Length: 144
Image (cartoon, helix red, strand yellow):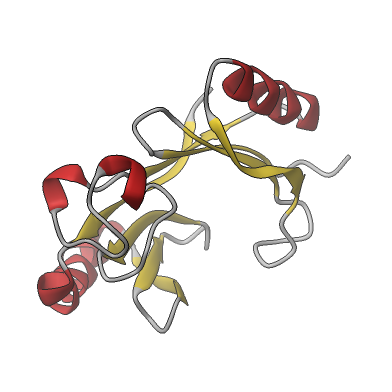
């Protein structure tokens, strides 16, 4: 498997400056701001493919793993904030298998396998919180 997208959460007070820095720093690599969510507090950056694979989120945006990590909702404690990692799966059956195995191993379901139409018509994904509260995703974008 390869990683489809990843990102970081930053203290709310530094969020705007960090996003501005990434806009400048990643421009030479062909990256630009491609998507925003939660009142512009979550920004996805993409290269020429248009696929947002690098994300920056404000710690002011609650994460499902905040309570598990001890930060509290929207906590600004960067050292304990969970993260989100997405792994590419070869097919939808592999996404399903990931979800089943991850939950069976003690993870908490954070989104059952299925199409995520807000991302794309073929974005088939499942989400599980690992024991530390990190949001781990498996993704297949192939049409089936």
